[in-house]
Image (cartoon, rainbow, N blue to C red; front, top):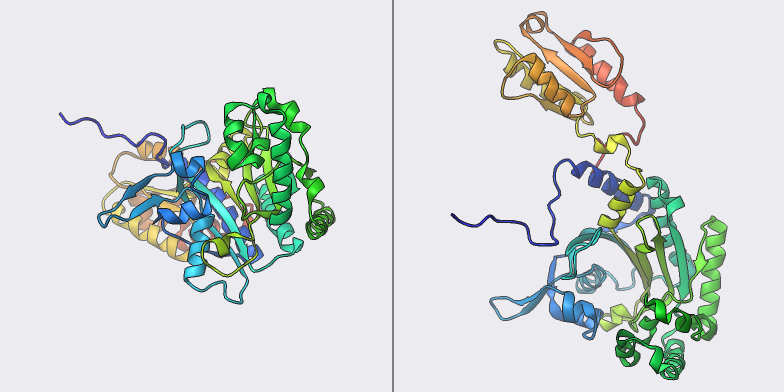
Length: 438
């Protein structure tokens, strides 16, 4: 016999019972982006490998160890995208979206990295990201942070995440700081671990990210980038803080929050949580004014963020912040038994869907007793069962049974049934279902 086929390790199936939770999250994202006037961008999952080498850097773990890279039949080196920003920048340049224009864009989709799978992190993972082009002030930096804060508020996460901010300054200021940092670490070379020594020449700022407990005192005493900023970057950072204060968005300044690549500048931020164990990042962003030019476009200011969907879904579940409605799939389950009833059930189902477009309706198929059909209706998590037998068929009525409440069973004609279900849809909380999902 042939061997059993299984999913690739770290690339997971999303089963039907979990789909409503993802749809619940995605619904909030889409509504939020529309509120802020951001337009969706969709890019291919496959790109030329050179795109990521130029954007992420050849001497990085992502490019050297984690990307899924192969040669196609033409001998071209292609890679599954490990992140979304480079693809959006490439598409914006290629399609002329940045010429004397500003763009507020967002994306969602799968990314791929060959790293050790762990809780909340997978080899195929999903991200939602925002990218803004053509605006350089602290006002737009504040807006993208406010947008993310509003998502946490809508999901009930705002009290479980913390905003950390820092400034990376200009490229020139950062290069001067880098030399100071290298001198400092060289003077304490014996205290650096192997990873820090490797980064000392190629990416010394990333040493500040080290989680090695033996190096924390050394890192804490290191020169702070924020003390070496140029005047314009200081003013920009002060403008960001003033606007965040005005919006009532709480933050902490984390002087160890950095990015290792030269195209990053000024604002950098992360939303972190301790609700999943050790402190973890659920959203990271900042300003990357040098990337468009690095990928062949004209110099263009840019700022954005990316968030990991799996970690946010896990956070919602861990904190038990998933509303029951996000687990519901159906509103009405139609059951029936008797001569000609199965056909009339299909007709009634189409009638309800036509007159109440937001109503989620499933028609029972396959026969069986009323008792077995009602068990299936209950397992479906539908709010109502509609029952149709030969007597109802002859009378032009249907029985409406409330499966989750105490309302007595009713015999209704089609018009009255539509009216009753319409009233229920109007009465239920606006956020109680996925009937408006896009």
